Length: 335
Ligand SMILES: C[S@@+](CC[C@H](N)C(=O)[O-])C[C@H]1O[C@@H](n2cnc3c(N)ncnc32)[C@H](O)[C@@H]1O
Image (tube, rainbow, N blue to C red):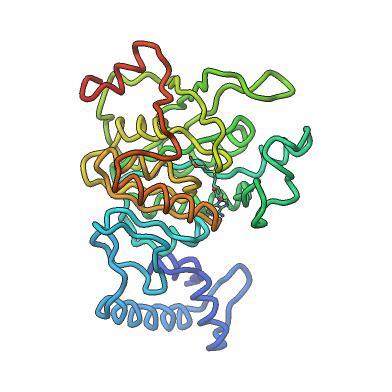
């Protein structure tokens, strides 16, 4: 029987770098494509099962009642321990979470395809593209949306999500065309929602006014409400100090559709923290991460203040459009 390194990873839900390190240090023979002999497979399994038990007995960081990797400490955790954010790469972060530990994923990844495209235009939209990732940059780090990377991301999303739960992933038109089929391979895609930003933005071939949100499930779960339309008319955030800050109402609608009190909401591309604010408003717990330091300090300040004052200093007013259907959705309990 031929096993692979991936089999070990899947069997024990551990990070692949950890296995690779152990394999290197113990000179375990690995064949082409990560294949292992039965003996090597058993050695790895025994070692990690023992280590996992040790970790489970020792004090580890406890997150919303779940134990997670001892190496992981939050950048910020609220006093009531309902909100934690981590300075980490999305895939790395998800790998550290136990299987089936999250109730809903709501996220807005930083797709590189769209940014590359914008770079070909004036490139001045939100600063110099070449500055991306530097401390003074207006551009943020990108998540490279190759199919391979995206598959790895979705695989982790699937693993951490409980069964019979929902996931919402935001897409621009470029990334949607290439990556939507990959989502379909992993989750049951239920609908493609349209966020209508009401005012037009920039664009060479028709000016952009919308973004998409892929709505999918792991297993079966009805929506909380049958009266939410699939076009969401919510104005964009203007003048934000964090590029691509989204209105909290976009995330609030996702949660109106799918969340219950105390659900664990996860956003692995946190940005300015809009999803965290939406989760707090919906009486949910929240787990988020972002690769950018700026995102961490921005979100921390925003969340901390919101928890104390109940006011959002980075989105002071509602951005919901003034049509009756949308207003009704946001007038408490009448949706
Ligand atoms: C489109 S923004 C999210 C905006 C957010 N929804 C908001 O309302 O502010 C995407 C975020 O992904 C982060 N990012 C890029 N690559 C990442 C990675 N590999 N892992 C985690 N975060 C990443 C960026 O720093 C950026 O904050």
